[in-house]
Length: 170
Image (cartoon, rainbow, N blue to C red; front, side, top):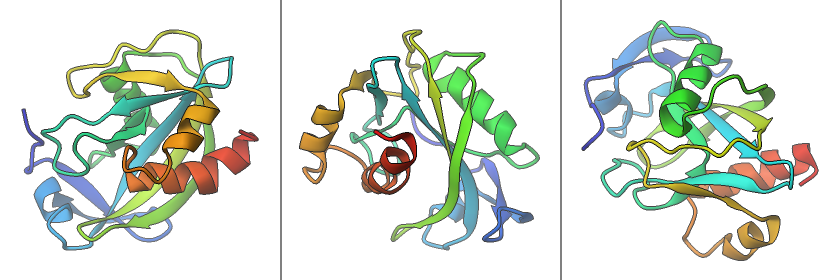
């Protein structure tokens, strides 16, 4: 399995407004084309955070632990539609009540993303798809102990420390 480099993504400005379109391959080639993504931080009622393990075949951050759901917004799709689709596709859940935490620009050496960060609480056990290499709930102390060890994606660590933990009182 591998990512579809011909998939079409919207290109957005720094406020998230669509200004064009490009392929996944173009967006992940070092072009720095700003494209929107959704991230969901899924907590259970015990305050544990569900994380997915990225498969080894992914083109970005293979084998690392990351947000419960992370996916691109497709061209012509709203952020809300993308979030619902990605939650259904990646962890098999529907009907969650989402809370928007923040939107920001993330930059790495190969891409720029306009990240729309959401959280939700559910005690329904996620059912990871074959897009993922499994997942599990992590306690706050497990996450704290693993930060900086290379277990997590750099984006998850930054987002958890700067957005999720402060805004959810975790």
